[in-house]
Image (cartoon, rainbow, N blue to C red):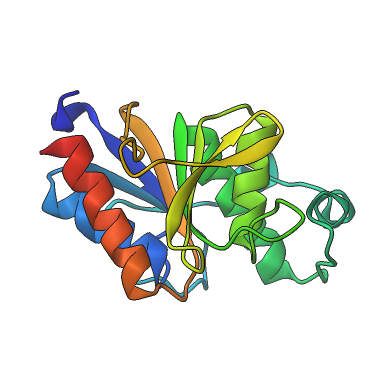
Length: 185
């Protein structure tokens, strides 16, 4: 795959998204960061501020998301816009990479979890690096499967999404770095 054809879709926020963006830039890969007015982000490269009309395209019922994720989301304008911008990240990627934690119920912790659930609903290749378990997992139709050390994930599609926790640990940063090295070196 030619790096010049690749685009990372992310959000540019502190933590995992900023790390995905930094490694994309280091490897000469284009970057699009979806955000909205008033949202604090770290990455300005490829910044795409979504307007009100665009955000509405990614709108989803918070009640539906709460049921799907087995947790309660409170109705705030910022949370709604955040979920809408995550929709753009996942919708544009052909495969999805997430840094976070897989919970007992199979969802991913935090707002990032909505991105993982949306990827499942869209039947997109989905990989999560679980920082607590210190390993990559991929979603196989109905359950998470651990990726073997001999077959870690490799980016296969030119349009991919990278997102995850704001609380990036050292093993998560290393996982992103190694993912880019395996895929683009």
